[in-house]
Image 1 (cartoon, one colour):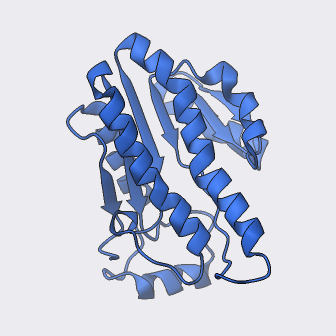
Image 2 (cartoon, helix red, strand yellow):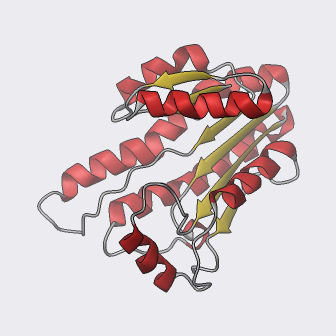
Length: 209
């Protein structure tokens, strides 16, 4: 197992150590920023994998027709669609050779409904493309033992939220709560352990539609 992070290498190593405490084996780490396709070169030594989880995907709060719209489109399509696509393509040959592969992408909130956005249209459009990509991989590689699916979380309670954000997202959530990280992890775990779900986009957003 290899864990990737791009901002805080010390924090990434602490996470790897936590994995080691429960599994008895500390995974390797790769600390590398991802902003362009050339940045993916750092991943080439790590593409012989059976399971690929792509939970990466920054957001640009840039409305249509704004002064920075072109930059937002370049960044969002590259980082949220092209990077996961190229990384999956690199990993597929090994998965096919092994007769087993699991790919899980993370989409936008309620991405299975192709939810529109006036605040982040480039981000939403790029994330929506992951569903088409997952179906393409499922259609072309299912016979090789490979599955590819997309998970679309809602407002997840993470360490990156401050108290004000937590309160705001709870008000927006139909259930009045934030999704627990372990719930999202369990969904990804199921997708990695069953061949029955393939090419699906799963809404795990506590009813946000």
